[in-house]
Image (cartoon, rainbow, N blue to C red):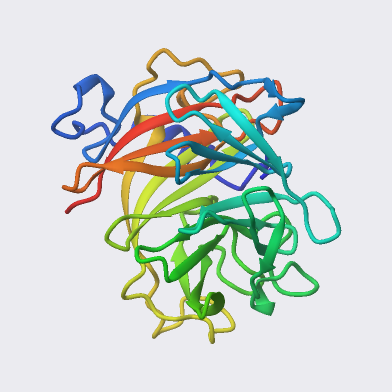
Length: 341
């Protein structure tokens, strides 16, 4: 998503720099702890303001682990890069487009078990399936209410930012970035599809309670069916707010038949627990090109789970979208995240 100022208060953004200073996971060095559940191993600016095969390497909005172990990185300017998982060196780039050859505002990415790529565009919004070479295979149906107004009730530049496949591969979930018109500003919708005879059909929808002034740029499933959810906002002159939550949709109410999410009784939203505010992470020597509560921060928008120890500790990689802007940085962040209780 292009740089966008949201209505996050300056005081809240500044407070983010001082919260969650508890010790990190047991195996993390104290100086790498962001909170009791999250530590940061390192960051990398290796791809900032670089090009590959004539394509700008930036505007990165989503990450996924490919079948060969490489890292797929999606640009919101209709390009899908394959990166070396260790060095981040680009190895290939595939252009993407819609059925008319028009560029996408590509934001969410899933690599299915057969190697096909599921990619969201927040323009309509849409979810399309692509081959490895970038050919469109099909397009998933989207509920009318989630379409951008006037076709639906979604706001422009605020639709499908996140996409994830739940364990087992039967359920696909997309996260709206902002609330629909008529819904409470503190409730965004998560839409699911169920795989049926090789195709995905619309299924349950859930209400996710987003923090005031923030949106949801990314969501990733954990091995037990819960979700890692990024929340993000930007305040001019202050910088970014980026928070990582663990969310559980398994007991939430299906809101696909609820016209307006306005706090009415009987609607049980997704339960969420704060893992960390990334402003509380150590700077690790990072520098920022514009004011930030922590110079490590930037416009973080993509996330992938790259591994785990089988005991609830996950390896997670984040990436920031530099919007091809001299005041922003394409930065990768390497975290350890504890998701057990």
